[in-house]
Image 1 (spheres, rainbow, N blue to C red):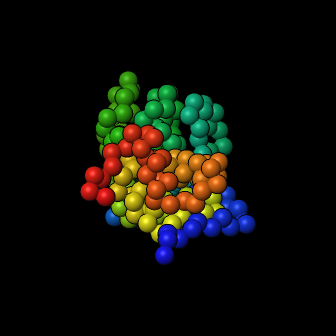
Image 2 (cartoon, rainbow, N blue to C red; image 1 turned 90 degrees about the vertical axis):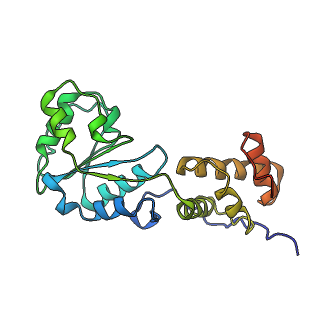
Length: 224
């Protein structure tokens, strides 16, 4: 018997940042537990850190939705009306404006939790304000590690499902062993596989996945 053909379902699925769609594995379980326990954050503060593509935004946005947090954009200066409610600021390690960040940290408290995301630990964030430096050094952190095999498997299945595709059974294990270990890479490879399959009217098989990875110069397992 040949490989299972992919099936394109009729119903579309929009990309979701819902908490129930967030896949938990050993690489992010500590961070998930930390955000679930947000009412116990010391001083109402938490920094969610980890490498790019590890899933920080999904988890942070799911937290913001669940607690009704205001989302502060990079460069925002008008913080009026934010007092007394949870706040999310993403990419805090790359956000200009020391005074804005310092003010947000000072606003945090029992009912006004502040979640900051960044790639690096707050101790390494650049600032010219001594008082902010001391606050950053003391920030509690929850770290997401680079995705492990279980997480990559889960997000690949999720991204194929959102495109209404069921790939051949051996496609996802094949990709897990070969793609860059990031959620963004998983999303990108699913997109490119789907586009190639659609353009060439092909089934989504391991052979097609291999072609996509070869096109981008991916290192293949010579023993496969």
